[in-house]
Length: 292
Image (cartoon, one colour):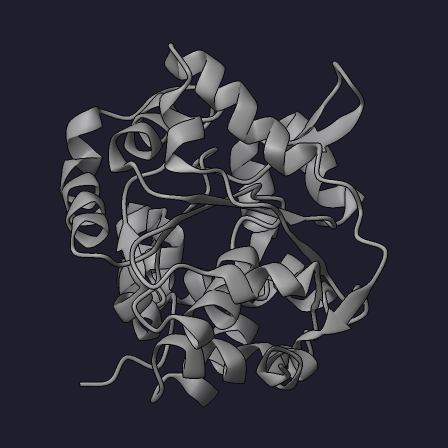
């Protein structure tokens, strides 16, 4: 049966026993309205009969999100076989949808490793590899994500591209440099990059969620997570900008002696990416790339 909601009452029940029973369901519906989960479900229901890149395109149109791509010429250089994309994670959700819309339109076999929140979007199963995220400041049991890691390696070995958000969670405001940045990138992801021996494409999202979202993160990451659904609906006015970096060759990846050195280099390739001088709207990309 086609599931028309991302988060339904069963999901709410699994989150807490207070959402069980008749009273619990009433409370759950109130919470879903308060945090715009009902709006997310409505938008999802309009496109859930699609999947993959077609679903991502339809969803973004319903949300009014029209993002822009900088350095689009570099997308002409996508290899025919396996490659990896690495990205910062400022939105914590819709950035994954935009990656699928952009890359899976060019390579339908492209998949993104995502956390369990995004894995609730069943229409994206064809392009998602689900793992458990690192939450708060604690590491999850590595065994929780072992199946996702195996699927990722299998996809790469079979010649398919895979995308990573190496932070494993949404970016946060850092008092150290007074900027919104990813937390420390996960060693497991960097090890996968090292093991894969394929080209690596840095992709940077130049924009971010609202200041209020990151303020809530200073209070508590769980409180911030409750704000996430509402953040989906403020991107239409923002016109998000995505920059395409230069490929890092397998030889360059292999040249680093330690995982820490490799991690710092790949992270810098994302965060030190210059702001492109020109961007083209997403809806003009295919015509642009088709030109000789």
